[in-house]
Image (cartoon, rainbow, N blue to C red; front, side, top):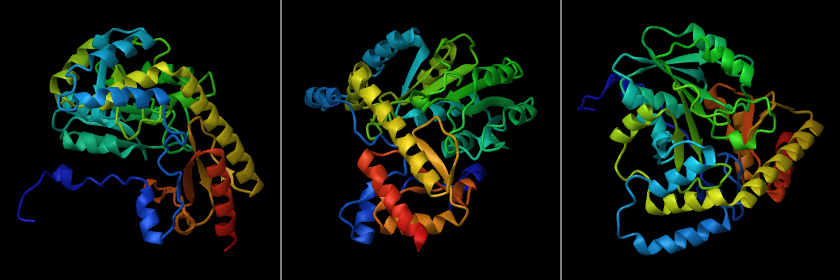
Length: 363
């Protein structure tokens, strides 16, 4: 290439998304395909979202609401914070990038677990910062390892709870002990994309008592439990001074009109949210039982997915599953060569997955 690009950009490994459902249908000439690879909600989204989106279609010749006013106010009431403490993003990825660009100067460091959500690393590098990776400890976030890596250049620390891709969690006691060791001028970003699925009350939830610590930035999404992945809506709850910086640099119309309306409507449907969570829990219980019967080890999880140790090259199994019309996720790119990650589906999809896996493992 004759054009010069940033050295940091040149080192970025492209984000690898889950295999698209329609691509598998075309490639393998399979009419019926199920996707259990991207931690999506298998039961869709609230019926209230359909109505809200339909009502707002007439306004699509207009720009979206700049401040996300209605959605911010709805979230402020739900979590008992001020609208000034909320930043809405085009997915939580958007807010991750805003934090990196808002608080990293060239050469500043951001700490994160290895391996974790690739957008942490990508956002830090595009902001000319330096990502500092801390390997997991027994498939869990190594909090002590993160503390040991803190330097005078550290500005951000990324924590994911529950952790993707392993499903592990951080308890209140563990988080408090960790936070006590973090300097006052370092922002702790707690990504809680899967928090709604947690069953263990001991797991740290940053919004149980929000804004007690100005260093903590909470990230949440409507993509998982609310089933709005295609709309791309995420939000952050944080100290108002941090929120002010992010709102200063975010794109003026970063969340489209239909996405704002969808998220606003989804919040009100507690019945759907509870159904979504129960479907996930039922699916996990079923999968753990069936996979255990196959003699397979599954990592404990508090999310809507689980990791399965096949004790063989998981990529080969992943490819054979594709031919059976079942999309799961090989964890080779995360460094877990023998693991598959599978999110829960509907009851029928979970049964289909188990049946397909049995056939593949017998080959």
